[in-house]
Amino acid sequence: MLKTIALFVAVSAAAFAEGSDNEQAQIWNLEKAYWEYVKANDLEKYRALWHENFLGWPFVSPTPVRKDHITNWITSNTSKGITLQSYSMEQLAIQVTGDIAMDYYRIRATWANGAGAEVKTDRLRITHTWIRNHRVWQIIAGMSSPVNANSQ
Image (cartoon, rainbow, N blue to C red):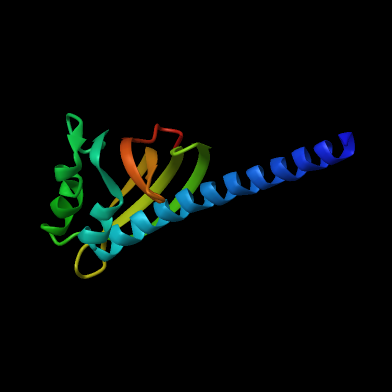
């Protein structure tokens, strides 16, 4: 009986760990999709990533914003003919607890004009809090800031 219980606990722990890895991979894939939507200027898919009750503080805003302003930073660039040309992401940490996930990463985003000439490069630290509602993960909170002089 004791062997059966030990085996059940071991199998359950392994299944839980795999689930956690799968959930972390889901969050990371959604973060990558986020930037692909920005690059494609697909504001509809981008907005779908955000929960209706989102509150966050993007580095381009002097105060926190809600979902109705979440695309302002994108349209501010595209209205000047500037689009995201390329990006690279550095995953730092993901923690999933139940239906909440915290994600921390750094990104280097290169923006270009219509002729393809590089206009600017953003180097940012990003924190997103994701909430799972009816099996769908959405961003409910977040904050971004420029990296420091050491690119950290």
